[in-house]
Image 1: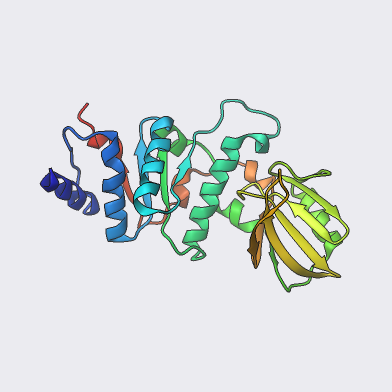
Image 2: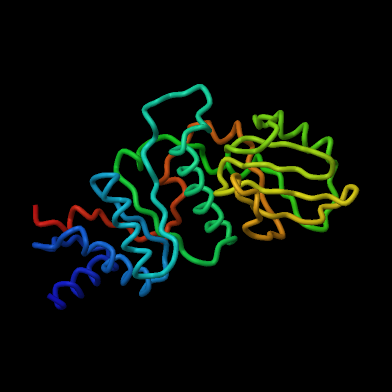
Length: 249
C-alpha cells in the first residue's frame, strides 16, 4: 500500500530497519529513486544476484532518466592480462566515477547496484587510482616523447589500432589511448607540442563521440592492483539498502 511504501521510505532515510512483506524485486527501483530524489545523496543498492543487479539498474534508469551503474563481481578467470576482462573494466569505471564524485568533479550523486561478493572483492585503493594519473587538457603543451614513455612505463601496450583498454598508438601528431577506466578510447590531436583537440571515439567506426576539454589517464598497472574494496570509495553520505529486506521470502 501507499502507507507501507511511505513508511519504508521514511525508515530507510532515517537508517531504521524495516521489512516490507509481499514486496517484489520490481519495488526496489521506485523506492530507491524516491529516496535518491528526496535526499540527493549517493545510493548503493545491494541485491542477491548479479542478474538482479542488471534488472534493478535498468529500472532505476527508467525512473530517473540517468545512468545507474552495476558493479560486477570479479572474474574467476585469472588471465595474465586482466585488462582484457570486461568485468575489470566495468569495475574500474564505477570506482573512477565514485572517486570523481568524492573529489567534487561530478555533479550528480552516483547510484550503484551490486552484490555482496562484488562488494567484498578486492580492487585498487582510492590512492592508487588517484595518484598515478596524467592530466591532458586542450590548449596545454606536452612533451609528446615523454608522454609516450610514461604510457609504456605505466603498463600500456603499443598497437597499430586501439581496440581494448590499456592500449595506445601514436602516429604523427595524433595519439589514440584507451584508459582502463574509460568507456571509450580518446584521440588527442597536437599542433606542435600543444593539445589542439581531445575526442572520444568508437573503435569500430572510428567516428568521434564527444569533444572533451580535459581527460585523466590512469596508469594501467595501477588498475590491476588490489588493496581496497568498493566500500573505500563510498562517501559518508551514501544511502544503502539490501533489497533482500524488501522481499517476503
